[in-house]
Image 1: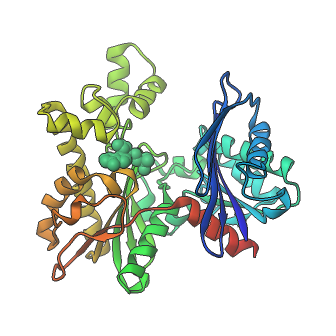
Image 2 (image 1 turned 90 degrees about the vertical axis):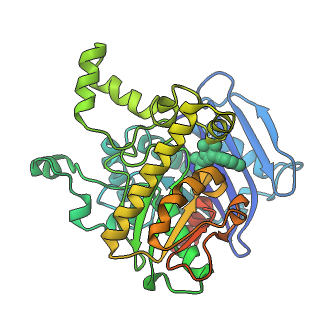
Length: 398
Ligand code: AMP
């Protein structure tokens, strides 16, 4: 079966065409600057070179049409016609409390996704635009929505409720939802597989450390806690997001700087995290690593603060689950960044696990970092959210 996986942003559209029997990526690409001057599509067919074409795309429907053009192109295409796309899987950021698993998209589902717009105003409307664009270009092709929040819907209320007046939950559904659920699910499943165990037998802590970062406690196969909250701003220090802070900081800074609460929240989303903490060095961990290695104290301290926060969450989730069997690193930093893994590893020795410095040099590979007799396994499992979406699409449409 050929599944087209779509991840839509407000001015971008990422895609992968996956042949799901062999789980092969036939082609992937990205449409950027949709609706803005200078829009371009970058398309990479399997085994071929990346081709970037600057083409005007006034909206997402134009972008989807272009994706189909590239996929069926005589030179860079990988299928003969649209008919070879059997289903489309869409990443949808927020499913609120309405969706605890993926669903086949119909009118009722579309309305329910739109009702979650308030909870993710930057993401859900873009996801809806992407779905509508695909419907227009590929009418009749079954489509599935896979939600970032769904895997965490198993959290108990003690984990998802905030200590604020209950009426805000009743009126506005203010609670913790968590994100990156597709990744936490995929990675915890794969970790159990690698260890030759059932996920239902294990307590797993997944550290999804990318530009956005979150940790989850996966107890016997179910998410029982995760570090992101109502929005992806809560939890770890991230590339540009602050993670946990004292909420009173918002009005304090607004008063001092003469700006609005919204503007402060924007700073907490876009100018904080390791970018802000390092005094502006970078939000990218490769730059921070280079700066730290050349002796920059701000970069060193930032990496220390980052690792400390990760370690604190691991400690909390070990207690939340009544013990931990496996700690997994994933996403850009978790898969590739030896400095961060080593810094977190220093804290983990008290749990009876270790990180082998030689194995820690590996990048982007499945590897067990801990020693054979360690009480807790520490490992790296690369995430693959597109493959996870394609699998869900097959499960629901085949
Ligand atoms: P993601 O959002 O999952 O793509 O992760 C992005 C982050 O991963 C950035 O901070 C990158 O610096 C980091 N990253 C990606 N590749 C490497 C690498 N080879 N070494 C160190 N950090 C990396």
